[in-house]
Length: 208
Ligand SMILES: C[S@@+](CC[C@H](N)C(=O)[O-])C[C@H]1O[C@@H](n2cnc3c(N)ncnc32)[C@H](O)[C@@H]1O
Image (tube, rainbow, N blue to C red; front, side, top):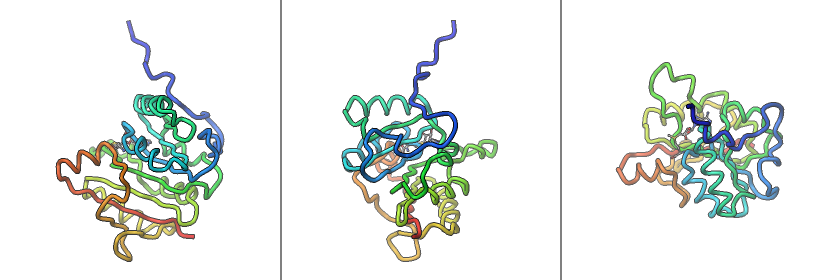
């Protein structure tokens, strides 16, 4: 007999129409930060403690991880200001309103797809950048990191060429930063650190 899907109750947002960012969390005050693809949620769970004043939202395409991390946040009493929704960021961002309402986007180790037939799954691309540019407030931050050097170079070329973003790296005219600026670490980042795998870290600011 077919078993029922255990994550049928995954936290979802309305299937259609605009989504006001104020409906994403119970807490209404504080900077709104969005993590795309939090996976098992290590970064988000640590970041919540670093920024108790902020609202943190994860958008995770895998229902299992969205459900488990969101439940964890509730159990820890952090649900009012941090949630993870089982949503595809590429479809969800265009529906978020209003413009200039997000303080930061984090994208840690995205796009674990290498085959050309999987190219349609890639999350970091011009359409997503356009939406993040629309949603970020002036000087808002976009942070992307990856342990796949060639992917990092592709992201850097793509974002450098986008008219809405200014590089905010260690050196003027570059988005690269050598060390992670936060104490919060994602699962993949911890593994890269343990294994000594170099990480490409890129930080940009929304032009005013
Ligand atoms: C390699 S994992 C990295 C997970 C986590 N960020 C970390 O650093 O450990 C990439 C994550 O992005 C999620 N993902 C991929 N495409 C997505 C999309 N379009 N919208 C939301 N999440 C996505 C995957 O399900 C996966 O959890």
